[in-house]
Length: 325
Image (cartoon, rainbow, N blue to C red):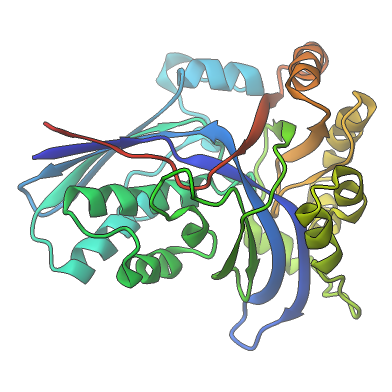
């Protein structure tokens, strides 16, 4: 049997417009995503039994994460916000089941998932875990990670999943333009190195709930100007062109996000916005030193009640280590 290990990254949406509602009930999106080094830990082992066994835990511990969020995790009681499903409602299990079915694999997988990326945050943690699970399974079974079947599996699991699927080499894109319902990806090879401060409040948002509050704009803003600024690595213009159409509906559901965005902005981060459908927000720092200083300062002001992390852009697909078990 073989073991594969990797560290799936999160993502942030630097630009997100919703041009139209589709006939199939989904929405057309126009978004530019970047991967960041806020990472989960994933270990997958091939087992002879034809099933998926998933165990999951918070890193460094559930008590530490709950403490930052101001939640009670004493006496082994897991707050609802920090519950990690281990059945087929977890995208990792769904992805590996689809992988086994697609390639006719009779053996199974034992999975250990260490979570750092919060759920209901708009940071794509579950999608990244699923994509990297597919990549690990492909490596274990010696299937080319560029195989079309792998990308079809990824797209069937979720709109963000294909973004994180790749060979995990230095050529993997840091950023991508996603259109359609998110499954149509155009890798962007030119992306400046960006440092962020990311903040996740102690409440998640349902993507479906946010979209239910959305009014599709009559005159949507295209991503063209933002992409041109990114190609020039013109950070000032990128900042002016950044937007997220889901901010307004998210704020209808969770008005306190306004205070979190204001705290990020007042700390010196510019611009600041929601990622995805939230509830995580982020601001752009000048450099790593400013990001570090702001995180330290905001922790004294906002914790307990908010997870705060500094982050920077990284390739969306992370290298995979393989070893015999």
